[in-house]
Image 1 (spheres, rainbow, N blue to C red):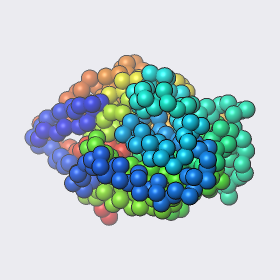
Image 2 (cartoon, helix red, strand yellow):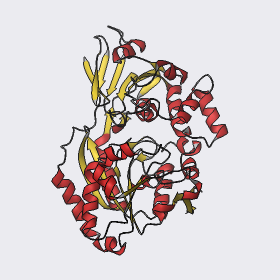
Image 3 (tube, rainbow, N blue to C red):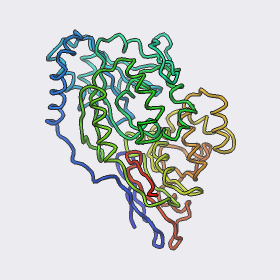
Image 4 (cartoon, one colour):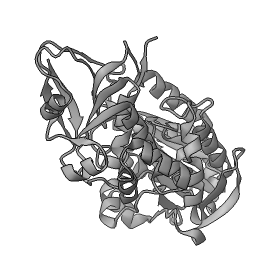
Length: 419
């Protein structure tokens, strides 16, 4: 049986030998991509519905956008949105802010690639810096006690908007919506509290779950405190723009998560010896830090003591040095979890916590051309040159009788095991 897994901007192939039980699990059939006319119409209708709000801002607007680790189609969405707003108010004072959270700031070149040269020249584009203590202001506390400190420039705008991507998120339920605010434009302290060991240990802090998910509910409160008013959230399918939802945050987000949740869920018929998955291809698989999302998908359907194989190009390497250092702590995954729990807050502890949790359940084999084998091994995982070697390392050979679940879409899928 031949299988194909997204990898970077292409795919990797592998042949699974006879004498093994291999099944491919995909969410619902791929949806049709939407065209420029659909995008323009959705944005135009949203702007017209909210004309009074936009005019009342007098052009004092802050538009939050995702960074380049997300396939948010900023280059297709942002220019059309700004042109439509410009028909109602003078946009010379409009500010675009990259909602980086704790990710590194985007460079001038990256901003131009992501948003377009014309946007960079016409508008002020800034990176949110979570570590800038003077640049973030306190606005209150959530019901769970999270201290909400948000970007000063964002708070200074009369109208706050966000453009982003909605996809399953491995501990916040789904991306998009108020996630543009927390972690997007939140201070380091706020993000640490929202991403704490205790919050992520909650059984509902999982992909596809919003109700009763403490991480999501905390984000929702912080986003409301921060005054986010309007969103333009998109969905992707097969690497192409497949939907656009624009308007009031709660209304538009409610619609898009219902769609993404329905489309992403896939029922798996039991636990498997081996799970072969991806991180969804480029841009989400640009570093090993992000690849934890795909690994967490494997964790949900692999049997205890099994193997997760993750194919992730990682053109930017590991991506987060603090994450790498945490994964190098101690002798095994339990040492990492103990270290995080005893020493929090720590930068990138959430990614290390989830990866270590998966490693307690199963061996992890990484197929990543952008990360040195020795780096992977120091992080307590195994490295393979290609999928064939990875399968061999997992004990797959002709007649080995291994059960193998193939989940090509990785973090774009929400698998559940049939009882």
